[in-house]
Image (tube, rainbow, N blue to C red):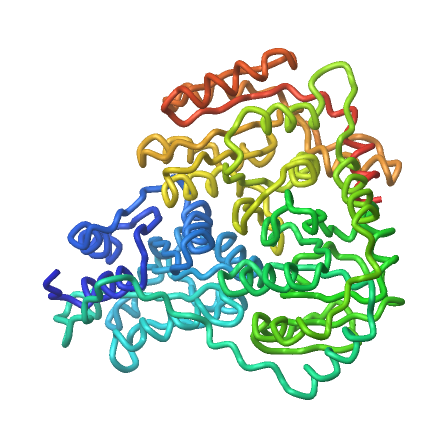
Length: 540
């Protein structure tokens, strides 16, 4: 591509970094320049229905592809509406560049739609620029590097026409293949690593808890090599689900700071935290202070969960590779681990009630969809049976907002995942509350050609909040929704849609959805009677 303007040079640079999509809701200013440049570059602009979803879709493409995600909004209300997606980028550690319209220097007289956009986002940003200082391409490179840094997160570019419509001084050099900048991870400190080796060498029943940093290709490869060499069993956080296959003997299941894993962890004589970010955990104290703990992390934390016995800050892949020879897992008997794994996976399998139980719906979905399907999961009570019954073999096969724990995530995430990886079946699991926050994106799926399957747990209630209300013995109020027929809503957008009220109809509904060749929504009337028992069994 011949680059003429700064906007064209910016888009060419993003393409060089592996970006294939820009998501957003444009205004009438500089957004249009970027859309035109994207078309010339062969990059797709995906018109979303909300700016929040655009930012989340951008983040999900980053998590799947390793390239930075890009979202774009107009000034004022567009930028403000994207803030929740920026918060996802920050707390769920996803690299995103947000581009928004600003004002020209000679427009100081304008107050209409004028807010300090950078100040609104500043607490969450890794970096920002308005292109007023230095070479514009150097500024863009700085933003991309910051977004893909350690930890990754959001960067913000605010643009005005006079800065992006001028001629670019030099076009970015084309590459034969995308170059994805890697975070510059420091080497682990020798003294901290020596202390970690001493603790590891003294243990015979170590257990490893893997967190979101383990999802990187290098982090996953190093972890799998360590497990193969040492026989150390692994639990993962929700974000790290699949970094060790949950179908492998040593991929035991999930750490959720809950009840099922407590006997297992307390029977260990050492805990190894591998890329475990405190942002993933529920807001509860660490329960395992009596067990020595070695932390391997790419970076320090602003709000550490607790003080580990030894902390090694630096490249976690290099750190764990240095522990191979010191690790002895001979205290774990294979039969013991198998029994403990079975108990972990049984905790969420609570059936019963007069209608379709959440566990029965998850079981039917697992039986119906291909084993390598990617799933996206909204916040809410339904996430417990999904996460604790669905087995994943690779990282990012399960996508969830954990650091932010926002509702309204699963449907936009599934649309983005379907676009980024169209050869794989994508299944979104959402509740009625989360779905209502982003129903307009059903139109985005049809327009963009995405074909996810959405499984909607419809019980007309904010079930998880209702459970907390009952625990506090408060009167039921403020958590129940009026009835919605989501199948009719989806059909109005052009989706294949089916409503299911009896368990016997689930298998056929999934078969029809997968065969439809369209985005498909299965609206399932759920009996919430077993949720309280599931919450108690998993969270305590």
